[in-house]
Length: 286
Image (tube, rainbow, N blue to C red; front, top):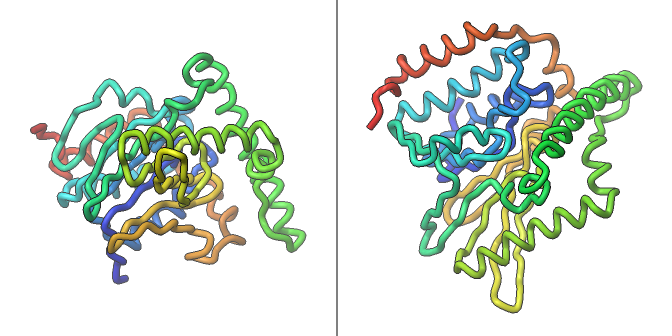
């Protein structure tokens, strides 16, 4: 299959290691493109909820694909998020074409783009991390419940629904939080004279212009691979929001892709990681 070229790919909030992660769908998408640069914009591996009893081989295949890109010289920025905050201990680390960072600024056709995860704007993260972690557990349970409901819905000949999206869209406080998040990101970007501000964290895919009395900026959010299955692509000076639902037209098959999957035990998991580093030639640190 001929791969579609992409100048810059932005993926965030994959949450590998959780039941809600659509790893198979993500793999189909990643295998269909040939990116020149990749921004992994936080929460790629969900270390908060990591459980050695649940690590399907499809999750490992996502990691392997990223490693293959790095081995081929594709520049990959791993921007740390809150669910993979352990990676922040390695900020500034470089291995081959892999860079672990808290943020990154890239020049794009005479403009500047600021990439970061966005959890720094989350008050819960700053003051009550245990509440945020509890909420993450509840979110994962909601995804499992949603899957069961969609299974029944499919049997009845109806389409899938997203309970969490309906809750977020229907609760005023959630809508206010999203609006405040976007406005805060835009205000800081404008103040620092960035043309684009690119975030993740809130699982709300978006591309829009935000204007204030101090200027304007293009706000972008790559969404997630739990509910929306979206990513951002930059090509020929333009940004586009990619949607797996619209591209592959497999909405009715998404639930089926999460049948029982083989898992890796703890020892096998870490041995596989080491094997991938060795075969990809990534153990040599520059």
